Image 1 (cartoon, rainbow, N blue to C red):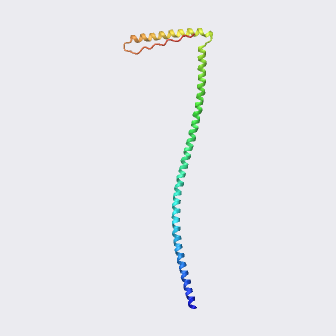
Image 2: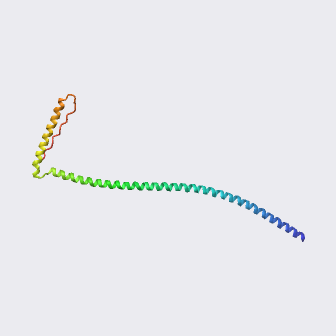
Image 3: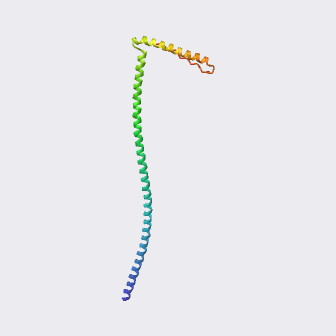
Length: 157
């Protein structure tokens, strides 16, 4: 029976030795896996750092573009207001021209005779002026310009 005791002790020792060998193999495999995981995490950190840097640059660029767009929108609003003011000024000018044209088309009776006399006087003065210029050009042999004539005015009724 002593032999069985020795044999069981040897089997137990061999079992412990095999367990120790398997534990060492498992630990080495785990160490290798841990090193691979560590390398993978290191590469991920580098890539995440690059992504973070790029996203910060993108945010800065986006903020610059947003502020530029905002300033341009404000300028565009001022231009739109100016255009609105120009439109109102144009309407006022059109009303003024219409009022003046109505006053000229239908003058007061007391001014009608005066306007007819002024129109006749202005027409006579312009004809004398243009005839004088035509005669002057005819006498100058070096000037070969086209002689312009004043169009005949419409008579006010």
